[in-house]
Each structure stands twice: as structure tokens, then as C-alpha cells.
Length: 445
Length: 154
Image: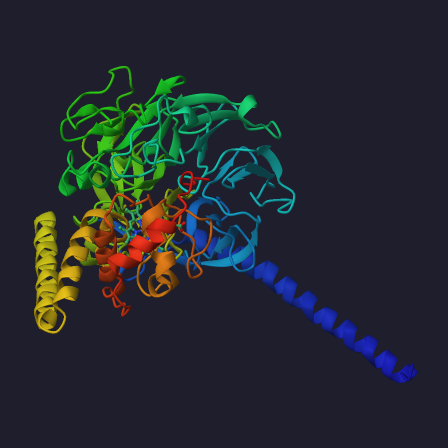
């Protein structure tokens, strides 16, 4: 109101001036950007630099690692897009109420938080055929992405699966997708071994373990149908206690899962198992699944020392009696309680040839080996040939815990959980304890 | 080799722990012989029935089994604490701001004396400085205890 003509004109003039300077800035940026990108492209090799201490990791010769980001949240599984965005699924929404974080990588490999969405906690996130899929502990959602793999409507996902059962334990819904429009969802059993009193002393197994009708297996649904629930899906495989790491093997077109084996052999059955046996047994099993398979939980477990399927003590076993031969044999049996939380078939070209089409497994680390030393907290490589495990597994990345003493005590600084492959063939690992995101690269060419 | 070293290391730390407990037991033997016996028995019960979940250092397992270090349950009212052991525990409530997904089974098969001893051990170990629990207290709580139908897994 009090503005005189003169000041008004001056203001307009200033505005025009500042507009001009922004325009100038943009012209500059737009010319400098392609030039610098061209220079980058001309530079030999990658400009991603490993941390001087490789992020604290111990790796095979020729490999390096960096800490991509510190999310400070319980980072479970992740996806990395060719455009350098990283989607991280959190076990619980963070302080801002976001359950999925979006980070963006700078050319040096370090990433900054870009945004967040999804109001639910959970474990799984997966990118395929123009959709980002993510799960809560009872539902699976999908989000359409644009040609830069950015979620278009972060607040309006399509709910494709709903009403899945979730207990206090084994509640997370990991999943994997095949190439024919199907999604395979883990529905973990809310028991240790289907006992009348869960984890109780001498508590027998419930006859027929009725919960297997709706949990303790893998259910198959369609990726593009809305609001599917039990009636719309197929119980694809049963007798599986709980899986967190799952992946689709592209070589033989088959679902592979990592089962979390049962606990408490000694504390429930002290007369049958010593604390040492209870620490080693049962095996953490990798299974190659076909429709209709039954892996035998809770009636049996796999003993990797006797190389036998053993009848569970809750169902009349004594540590020696063998289980019904009809149950599925594991593809590979790993030492007990190490908690395999991530499974990834490596299809990249960055790593040496022996890694191609093999499996990386993130072992979250044990707790049920006490009073024996705890184990795990590392990423393992399992060689494969033509879609089948071939040869002995080896520890690929170690040192997440901070020290051998911290591993033995189960007091790890970082706990590996999720795995992802970058477009350039880098291997990414999440830590759901402190929320560190690691990237492992091969340096020798 | 690494495994061997680890086992050695672990054995050594166990030995140290045992020695410490022994020393403590010795130093307190004269004035409170009863307490020393309770602590020794309580430790044995802890190893057999609690350590698998709550761990040797009482620190628990993140997100799974709660710690027994200065929690409101361990330091608080003895009736509530005794009930946790008698009935087991699987409530969808936070324990001092954190939630834990595992299920604690009932330990009502332990005798009054055994529950008193293990809770005395817990309340005086892992940095806790609580008072002892007596068999009489356990007996009284057990008499009035209404058993829950079943553990909740949901």
C-alpha cells in the first residue's frame, strides 16, 4: 500500500536481474555438466574409491570396500538402481515415520539421503519390470517407477497381497519374483518347533502341527493382482520354519531359500543334547524348491555332522533316529544358528569369473550358540555351476562384528543382513544393527 | 586356527569369570554364607535355563531377548519378577523402550528355592545391585498365581 511507484519499479528491476543471473547459472551448469561427464567417461576405470580401511571389512585379495552411507536405522534388505538410487527397507519406520529410505550415490560412491516413504516396517524390497515391491509383516505392496526407476506415487502403492499371518517371531515377509509374473512369499512359523509350550522344557510337538496350513512355508501369488490373500495363493512349499534370504536362480529358473533352523535343542531337551551339540545343530539349510516340496519342519531337522535328516525330539526323536525319507534334502547345509538373512545370485561382470552365477549369503550371526562362542556375522560365497551348488563355501567378507572377541560374545558392532548387486556388478551389504550400507568392489582388472 | 584361538580365548574368559565368582563367593563367605550358596546355585540354574536366551553377560540379544541389566523388571517389584519366571513372558509391550520378538517359556518346573536363587543371582550380577529373593516369597507368589492359558505367539 505504501509502496511508491519508484520502489515498485526498482523491485521489478531487481527481480529481472536475479532471474537473469539464475538463467546464466543454469546455462553454465548445463554446459559444464556434459563436459565434465565426458571427462569422467574418458577416465580409465571407476572413480569409486574404497575406504582406506575397506570400511573395516576383511576381503579376498583384489577386493576393496567402502561405507556408502550411515542410515542409523535397522536397514534390512535393499535395491540399487542403475541411476544410483538405493532403496533401503527398514525393520521399523524411522523417527520421520518412513519405512523405506531413498539414498542417492555421488560418483565417488558415497550416498546421501534423498527421501523416504512407506509408513510400515518390514524386511523386503525388490525392483522388477517397472515396479518396486516392498512388504510389511502382513502385506505386500508395489509402486510403479518411471524410466529412471523413481517411484512415481510414493504415497499410493498398490496392495497386491494382504492378511498374511504374523506372530511375535519369524514375522517378516521376505519374497522373491520369478520371470513369469509370480511372487513367492515367506510366511514364517510363529513357533520354534511347534511345541505345546513354545521353547518349553520337554514340551512335546502339537500333533499334526495345524499351523502349517497358513504358515511355515512359501506361498505363491501373482505380481499384478490386487488384494490377494491365502485363498488366492498357492502353498508352493511347506515344512520351512522361516526364511529371510530368498532369490530366484536365473540359470535353472528355480527358487532358492535359506531356512533359519530351529533353536533350543539343549534347553528344551538337555538329556538328549549337550550345549556343544546344541550350538552346532541343526544346520542352516539352503533349499532349492519345486512346487509341492516339504522340507519337514517341525518333524525333522538336518544334522550336517551325521549328514542325515533327524527326527525332531518334539516328535519322538533322540538325536539319532532318522526322519521320514520323503522330506526334501537341503542343497547345502551350513553350521547352526548363523542366521542367513540375505541370499543373492551374482550375475554381474565386475568380479572374477568364479563368482558369476554363484550365491552370496549374508549370515546375520548367532545367539543360540551360547554358552559356546557365537558365530557368523559375515558374508559367505557359495560356488554354483549350472544352477546347482558346486564346491565348498568360503567366507567372502568378514569383520562386520569389529573383532573375533565381539563375534564370540555375540556383541557385534555391525550385523550383515541384506544383499544387492549394483548395475556395475558391485556387491552391496546392509547392516541392521547400526544401519551402515557397504559396497564391495573388485579393484584389479 | 582362528577357531582354535577363539575357543582358547573363550575358555580363558570363562575361567576368569569362574575365578571372579569364586573370589566373590570367598570374600562374602563369612558374613553371609547363605547368600554365597544362593549365588552359586543361582548361577548354575542361570547357565542351564536362562543363559541360552539372555546370554552369559546378561545382555540379551538385540530385538529378540531382553537384557537383564538394570531393567525395570529386574530392579522392580519382586512379585512381577517371580511371575515372569513362573509363567514365562510374551507380552506385546516394550521393555524400557525396546521390543523383543522371542518367547520366554514358563519355568514353573523350577522349585521355589531354585527360582529364588536364580533371581537372587540375576539381581546381584551383570552390574545389578538388587536385594535377594527368598524361597518364601516365591512360594507366596506361586500360591496366588493364576496360570495363563497359553503363551501368546501372536
